[in-house]
Figure 1 (cartoon, rainbow, N blue to C red):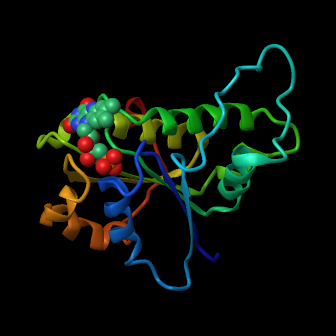
Figure 2: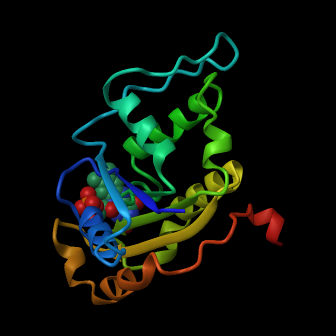
Amino acid sequence: MDRRFLFVLGSSRTDGNTEALARRAAEQLDPSVEQTWFSLAERPLPDFEDLRHDSDHVRPTEGNLAALLDATLAATDVVIASPLYWYSVSTQVKRYLDHWSGWLRTPGVDFGATLAGRTLWGVTVLADTEASVADPLVGTLNNSAAYLGMRFGGVLLGNGSKPGDVLGDTEALARAKSFFGGGAPLARFPHETR
Ligand SMILES: Cc1cc2nc3c(=O)[nH]c(=O)nc-3n(C[C@H](O)[C@H](O)[C@H](O)COP(=O)(O)O)c2cc1C
């Protein structure tokens, strides 16, 4: 199957560290792999409204939400590039994931069946030098992939605070070179692997 990567940029600023690290990793993809980049800062999503127990969700037909739904359905690989904000994903990324709940219940979309078996990846940059503080972000992405029956390729971590800092993190840049070449097993919840 031809690979089509969707990079969802979740920083609240443009040209930040997380995008820089994601682009380093993406440089290694084969030229035959299609890349779509979607910046949530430039193309913000509306707030999610929980209609599960009132009425059917309706498929969005225009605007950023419709574009991102179509891009998500078309992707074999979804890469969530979120800075570490309060130890987890950014608000922008969280809102995107919340919309997944609506899309799972939108008649005619087949979101769950389409994403099952596809691959979720993460890229994050944090100011802290201790990588384990990003465990909540890693858990959010791993468990979301497990819920959807997706594969999970893990999270590429880098260190930095102001834009450009991550380009000085030579270990992260080295990890970026092989990140997308790594394995992506079917995601499992932690309690399933204990
Ligand atoms: C709202 C906010 C929350 C943050 N929370 C954390 C955090 O919990 N841990 C951490 O190490 N860095 C934290 N940071 C620092 C960012 O992760 C860091 O500056 C990162 O490089 C930003 O990525 P970007 O350049 O892609 O926007 C936070 C920054 C902001 C603006």
